Amino acid sequence: MTRLSDIPVQAEPGESQVVESPLVTAILNNIANTLAQFLTSKVATAIDLRAVPHMDAATYQSLKDALSVGEVSAKVETDVTIEIRETQYSGIWWVTHRNEQGSIVTELIEITDLPDILKSHVIDMRAGLQRLRQALAEPSPP
Amino acid sequence: MSTDTPSRSDHSQMQVGSGDDVTFDEATAERLLQLGISRRRFMSYCAGLASLLALPQSVVPRLAQAATSTTLPSVVYMSFQECTGCLESMVNSFAFGGGTTIDNLILNMISLDYQETLMAAAGDQAEAQLLSVTAKSGYVLVVDGSIPARWDSGYFISGERSGVARFREAAKKAALIVAVGTCASFGGLPKADPNPTDARSIGDLMANLRISKPLINVSGCPPIPEVITGVILYYLSKGMPKLDSLRRPTVFYGDTVHEDCYRKESFEEGPLARAFDDANSRKGKCLYMLGCKGPVTHNACSRVRWNQGTSFPMMSGHGCIGCSEPDFWDRLNRNNEKGFYIPIASGSGHSRGLPCNTCHDDNGDDDD
Picture 1 (tube, each protein chain N blue to C red):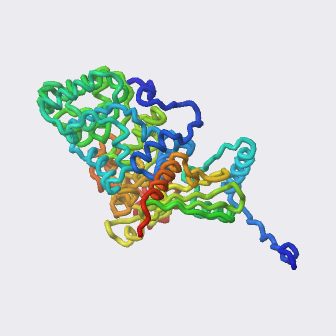
Picture 2 (cartoon, chains in turn brown, green):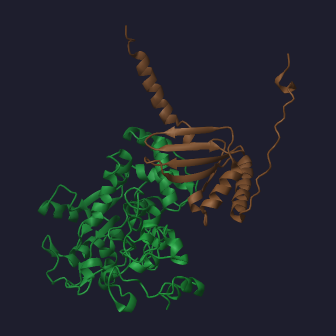
């Protein structure tokens, strides 16, 4: 039987994005350095896009295009929505916090193995375990 | 006035200024669970606050600790010559959240030990509470409204004491004084010409009375609710914020309203709106010629916006009236005229520091 790796399919890498904006180049360099630091120190970092000076709409889109999208996406839905998307570069995440009306409140580029917002906290897990045990202890309906 | 930074260590057990090594600890998560708040929702809230306060995201756990701390700083909120609009602004910011516990957390993170409008006590009971709270050291004194300079003028008497006497006593043991609103920060409406009560700002009164305490001015008529609570949160989590020359936190008052105004583009390139609701006004063009004071007004209206980030005055077609600046009621504009609808200066080009060609391209009718 032909194995998957035997199938002669090769994904041609697309043309690399030409980054024209010096600001985007600077941010990407910063991200690259931060990712390199994370690999040795394991200290997660976040870049607040609102705090980046002179981030106009064109620069923003250029940065978003340069980072593109990767394999993982997730959404936290409470009364607000938080969209988490790994970029094409593993370990670099684009995190968008939206308010109740759907408007963007905060937008971050997080350099980490997994953004904190996705992790379960041990306190929440203990509470969840307690609730699950209570549910199991209740008699099942006939 | 002293510029000493008051210690936050007596208000909570968290470490301040020890770097960014604070993690989202179990105690904070436990308290959020007890309050019935989604931890992820709260993290998102703190991320937004950190962004608003221009703080690094690494400070989020510290903000979370400050907002959920069980050791609350005592706050004494005193009102003088004011309209209660500032308190109304702050309190209403929580009502819009549908009373959710996250929004109420801001009120929960301080121990509001005295506030005439909100407290149940009145009369002698309220006075006794004020004396009891201000007998201890280290509280934050929030002041709303200006105060008549002369103690015997009879213009402000409460609890059988003049405004000056009430403020002087309350300020004695305060760790920090926060002047909320333009009346407290700069005198505001009571100080406007002809200033019948000889109203003074809190800063001026402190200088007169030789009170040396750290002072933060949170100006605006009223201030943006998020700015009021943001300053409190900043102080709780990071200590004294950086202040401008008028003692306003630069994080909110560093830029002019004009800087982030979506109508700014036409300020530089024209055309300008010439009448309220004219075609250019409706197209989002600059309201400078209609008296907008945005270019000279330092505030966060166009950045933070009002009503949970919904809009700011220029989005409704009305220019900025400059309410967060000193003496905005009596500002002299073009030809030494007073008025909210009088342009700051004549001309659309040179007087705004714009290049010559911009001015002369602007139909020529406002060249100066």
